[in-house]
Length: 183
Image 1 (tube, one colour):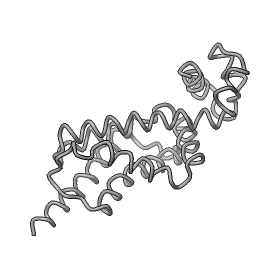
Image 2 (tube, rainbow, N blue to C red; image 1 turned 45 degrees about the vertical axis):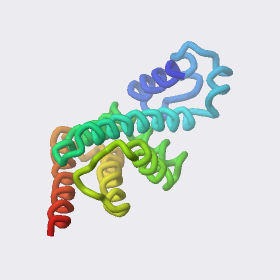
Image 3 (tube, rainbow, N blue to C red; image 1 turned 180 degrees about the vertical axis):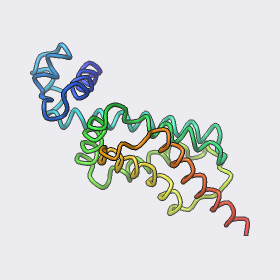
């Protein structure tokens, strides 16, 4: 499966989604087309599985960060993990995100939100009690913005500047929540 994922990524980067075929993927991965179809029903399933795996890895990194350093200052590593989840060209990132949402529908964010909460349950000592609504805002804000960035590559937004802005957004929100709690 790793060979199939690597081949898919390489082909996406080289020729884009329109030129990506299961035959090309199988050939690049060094597997027969029959073997590829034993694991996946087509290129959309491959893309969705790749995206799912990358999202799970990022979720794990974020959970480790929150468990190790739950202060407001630990926001940057979280944003960096989210931004690194879907590397590659804007077209590759969009193809992976689209496949993830096409396969999981609107429930995909809920699934990742719940899996993240389960990963940190009983392990993270946050310096703030967050309501389900506040957690929803935090977990969806940057992820939704990253999806929008992938969908609008013509804006040529700077990843470095975006990272700073995402950090500012999250830190400002968390700081406001802390200030509200103290009142």
